[in-house]
Amino acid sequence: MKTYPKQQYLQALYLLLCFLLLPFFSSAQSKPKVFVMEIKSEIDPRTNRYTKIAFDAATEANADYVLLVLDTFGGALNDADEIRKRVLNYPKPVYVFIDNNAASAGALISLACDSIYMSQGSNIGAATVVGADGAAAPGKYQSYMRSIMRSTAEANGRNPHLAEAMVEASVDSTLSAGQVLTLTTTEAIKYGFCDGVAEDVEGVLAQLNLQQANIIRYEPGTADNIISFFLNPFISGILLLVIIGGLYFELQTPGIGFPLLAAVVAGIFYLVPYYLNGLAENWEILLFVAGFILILLEAFVIPGFGVAGISGILLVVGSLVLIMVNNDNFDFTFVPSDELMESLISVVVGMVGAAVLIGLTWNRLVSSKAMDRVVLRNSFHSNEGYRSSNAAGHLVGKTGLAHTRMTPSGRIMIDDIIYDAQARDGYIEKGDAVQVIDQSTFALRVKKV
Image (tube, rainbow, N blue to C red; front, top):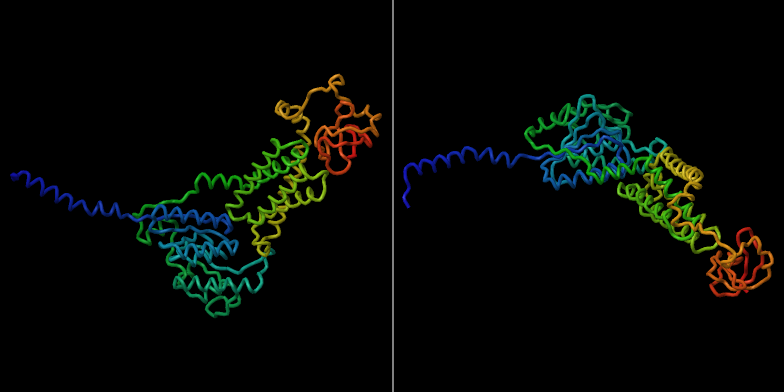
């Protein structure tokens, strides 16, 4: 094949252009990715779950770096510890930008990061463990907090003794003797706890030479927004109202109908968000289910209303209260008393609201077209074989047969006429012989012969 001088010239020019443009293509393809997430709230199960989902998203995005923007006064120790381990074990570098406060649990999470950057006027420290009343927790909790603060600082080459001083008062003469350590931005730089000062995320990236990086800002997905919507106290109160109101209406109507379905759906919308956010423990959900089953047994199996029904109601209400607070297997040491009271008030308000709703809507509900499908409105005439129990005093002492199973209410047949009746004791099977012993306004009272 012949090659002409003009073709040789074009080939050489093409190769030269490829050689010159290669660095630009390489830099575009190798442009680092920085994944940015924010924690600007109390450290609790919701924050714990948020960080787990965010780190999973960073892995899926194949991010080269993770930047955590932090502003918190602290929160639950167990959740902070899980976040700390998640940060330490993440395979890519994790940096933190303290935008105002990193107190208590926030200080622990910050120490787990590879580099710490702070804005002017920020603080880090004050990691003393406190209980529900705001006072310092018992010594075993302080000891555990000191140990994880030391080990976390050591893991990233920071002074473990200063980290420990953030938990309990230090006697180090270089610091405020007798005070729990809290460092300003300037002090944090002086003692090696801060790697730089920045005013925003872009300033942090500039100090890391990542100005040209692709920034991926994490935003919770639709499912997480829906979960947050149902965690709203107002929405939770409405769901409680539907649960309690649905159970009440179901107990007032025979069979399984719409009220029970509404209560079940509301229960799912109430429980699932709290469970996904780590607030609802497995045993709390089991208490709710057990209480629900007892109520159903009381309504459809066990005659009357007694121990099973009352126990079921107590279990349901108790579980709904406990689900809303961050206890650890019956350990309420770090559950503020006001949170427990708020949870109880929410449930009580839901119950009262359900009672008010029942009172206001009962007559309208019964007379609505929707209830025509489930409520019998036909008239029963004597020529059709029906008799009113008010005019059945002459039947006292007579015997007949149970026309239906009586649990304890049902129907009996005497002289080929059907009457509403109620068994005095226990159950009576269909076809059993019965005797009328009394009558009430609406039914005969019978006993098994």
